[in-house]
Length: 257
Image (cartoon, rainbow, N blue to C red; front, side, top):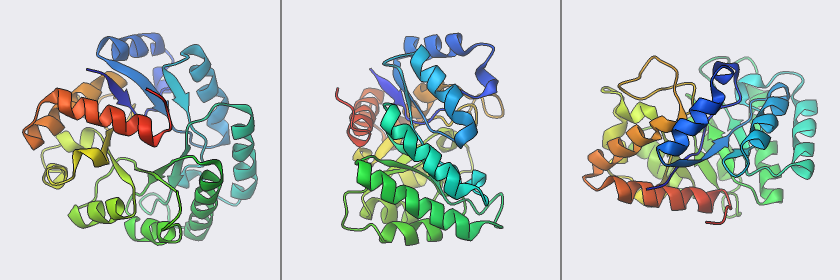
């Protein structure tokens, strides 16, 4: 049984003391690939350093996280776009709109999100979408790309059945993480009716650790817990969830098996 953590911030300082152990523990649990979304220009060097340290295991993306969008976003986007000419990056992410932390740059967030979707489309790369309390705004931008080849995933999906169906109808996958193990999240009832072919697995580590590790540092080996929870919800074998999510992930991120 092979698994992929499609969203881990392994390059952050939270892992500086034991990054090797984290990677080894993931691999020993069958988590064979770790995909790293970028935050902004300040996180690029460390992310690429981690990718170089674990070839064939760690893969990087380039994107401007919505909470990092401010007046400097045009220059940041230019700098991040240049990375794709020099490095083997697998996606444009983490991008999107966040109305939970700060609404003061909503206009800039929308513009930055749209521009990064355009860039991803031009490079035939998937987008990794952050949509915290912003489904309406995110869907509005994605509607502009309907009928194109733009594809991607709604990272850390926490919407209801309507949002799940809307995302799927637009051609996107749902990234399911530790929240699906939270007792009162309501995500289980949503995922129960989502086709397995529309799901990929993620941790968002070091954040959003699944039960029984909730509130502690998350890590990629915990993908096994998320995989098991989805299998339990759907009443199927863990191997079926893992195999399908694995294939979904490789296809979305244009990686050969």
